[in-house]
Length: 125
Image (cartoon, rainbow, N blue to C red):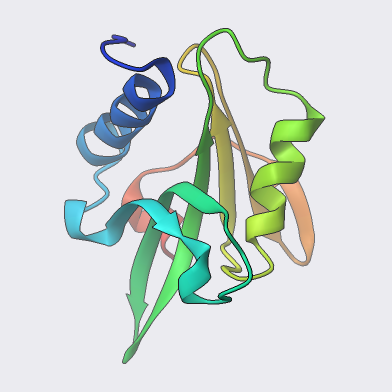
Protein backbone atom coordinates (compact mmCIF):
# COMPACT_ATOMS: atom_id res chain seq x y z
CA UNK A 1 0.00 0.00 0.00
CA UNK A 2 1.13 3.53 -0.67
CA UNK A 3 1.43 5.76 2.43
CA UNK A 4 1.18 9.54 1.91
CA UNK A 5 0.16 12.10 4.52
CA UNK A 6 -0.56 11.09 8.12
CA UNK A 7 0.18 7.35 8.49
CA UNK A 8 -3.27 6.31 9.72
CA UNK A 9 -4.98 8.51 7.14
CA UNK A 10 -2.94 6.90 4.36
CA UNK A 11 -3.93 3.45 5.60
CA UNK A 12 -7.59 4.49 5.64
CA UNK A 13 -7.36 5.78 2.06
CA UNK A 14 -5.65 2.56 0.97
CA UNK A 15 -8.30 0.29 2.52
CA UNK A 16 -11.03 2.50 1.02
CA UNK A 17 -9.45 1.97 -2.40
CA UNK A 18 -9.16 -1.78 -1.74
CA UNK A 19 -12.84 -1.99 -0.80
CA UNK A 20 -14.07 0.00 -3.80
CA UNK A 21 -11.71 -1.10 -6.55
CA UNK A 22 -10.89 -4.69 -5.63
CA UNK A 23 -13.96 -5.82 -3.71
CA UNK A 24 -16.55 -3.75 -5.57
CA UNK A 25 -18.08 -1.95 -2.58
CA UNK A 26 -20.05 1.02 -3.93
CA UNK A 27 -18.59 4.33 -2.71
CA UNK A 28 -21.97 5.61 -1.42
CA UNK A 29 -22.11 2.59 0.93
CA UNK A 30 -18.93 3.62 2.78
CA UNK A 31 -18.79 6.18 5.58
CA UNK A 32 -15.40 7.40 6.76
CA UNK A 33 -14.65 8.66 10.27
CA UNK A 34 -18.21 7.86 11.35
CA UNK A 35 -19.00 9.36 14.76
CA UNK A 36 -20.80 6.88 17.00
CA UNK A 37 -22.31 9.80 18.91
CA UNK A 38 -25.07 9.73 16.26
CA UNK A 39 -26.25 6.49 17.93
CA UNK A 40 -25.28 7.33 21.52
CA UNK A 41 -24.36 10.92 22.46
CA UNK A 42 -22.15 9.65 25.32
CA UNK A 43 -19.87 7.74 22.94
CA UNK A 44 -16.98 9.76 21.53
CA UNK A 45 -15.50 6.98 19.36
CA UNK A 46 -15.32 7.14 15.58
CA UNK A 47 -15.29 4.18 13.22
CA UNK A 48 -12.56 4.66 10.60
CA UNK A 49 -14.67 3.00 7.89
CA UNK A 50 -18.21 1.66 8.10
CA UNK A 51 -19.88 -0.08 5.19
CA UNK A 52 -23.66 -0.16 4.98
CA UNK A 53 -26.09 -2.04 2.71
CA UNK A 54 -29.79 -1.60 2.04
CA UNK A 55 -31.94 -4.37 3.46
CA UNK A 56 -35.45 -3.72 2.21
CA UNK A 57 -36.40 -0.23 3.40
CA UNK A 58 -33.65 -0.05 6.05
CA UNK A 59 -29.89 0.35 5.95
CA UNK A 60 -27.76 -2.05 7.99
CA UNK A 61 -24.06 -2.06 8.89
CA UNK A 62 -22.13 -4.76 7.05
CA UNK A 63 -18.45 -4.06 7.83
CA UNK A 64 -16.54 -1.99 10.41
CA UNK A 65 -12.84 -1.28 9.81
CA UNK A 66 -10.29 0.07 12.29
CA UNK A 67 -7.16 1.53 10.70
CA UNK A 68 -3.81 1.92 12.43
CA UNK A 69 -0.48 3.38 11.35
CA UNK A 70 1.92 0.89 9.69
CA UNK A 71 4.12 0.58 12.79
CA UNK A 72 1.17 -0.31 15.07
CA UNK A 73 0.84 -4.06 15.68
CA UNK A 74 -2.55 -5.61 15.04
CA UNK A 75 -3.01 -7.07 18.49
CA UNK A 76 -5.91 -7.93 20.76
CA UNK A 77 -6.27 -4.27 21.84
CA UNK A 78 -7.07 -3.26 18.27
CA UNK A 79 -9.51 -6.16 17.91
CA UNK A 80 -11.20 -5.13 21.17
CA UNK A 81 -11.48 -1.56 19.89
CA UNK A 82 -13.37 -2.51 16.74
CA UNK A 83 -15.53 -4.99 18.67
CA UNK A 84 -16.65 -2.16 21.01
CA UNK A 85 -18.22 -0.47 18.01
CA UNK A 86 -20.44 -3.51 17.44
CA UNK A 87 -22.57 -2.51 20.43
CA UNK A 88 -23.96 0.40 18.40
CA UNK A 89 -23.36 -0.86 14.85
CA UNK A 90 -23.91 -4.64 14.81
CA UNK A 91 -22.11 -5.50 11.57
CA UNK A 92 -21.54 -9.01 10.22
CA UNK A 93 -17.91 -8.28 9.30
CA UNK A 94 -15.07 -6.53 11.13
CA UNK A 95 -11.54 -5.81 9.99
CA UNK A 96 -8.38 -4.20 11.30
CA UNK A 97 -5.47 -3.02 9.20
CA UNK A 98 -2.16 -1.23 9.52
CA UNK A 99 -1.67 -1.12 5.76
CA UNK A 100 0.75 -4.01 5.83
CA UNK A 101 -1.79 -6.56 6.93
CA UNK A 102 -5.57 -6.86 6.96
CA UNK A 103 -7.19 -9.16 9.51
CA UNK A 104 -10.90 -9.76 9.21
CA UNK A 105 -13.67 -11.79 10.80
CA UNK A 106 -17.26 -12.57 10.00
CA UNK A 107 -20.13 -13.43 12.28
CA UNK A 108 -21.49 -16.84 11.40
CA UNK A 109 -24.18 -18.48 13.53
CA UNK A 110 -23.30 -16.27 16.49
CA UNK A 111 -19.55 -16.99 16.37
CA UNK A 112 -16.79 -14.71 15.04
CA UNK A 113 -14.48 -16.57 12.68
CA UNK A 114 -11.42 -15.38 10.78
CA UNK A 115 -12.22 -14.93 7.10
CA UNK A 116 -10.84 -13.06 4.11
CA UNK A 117 -12.97 -10.08 3.10
CA UNK A 118 -15.10 -11.20 0.14
CA UNK A 119 -16.38 -9.25 -2.85
CA UNK A 120 -19.32 -6.94 -2.20
CA UNK A 121 -22.05 -9.31 -3.40
CA UNK A 122 -21.00 -11.93 -0.84
CA UNK A 123 -20.16 -9.43 1.91
CA UNK A 124 -23.61 -7.87 1.95
CA UNK A 125 -25.55 -11.16 1.77
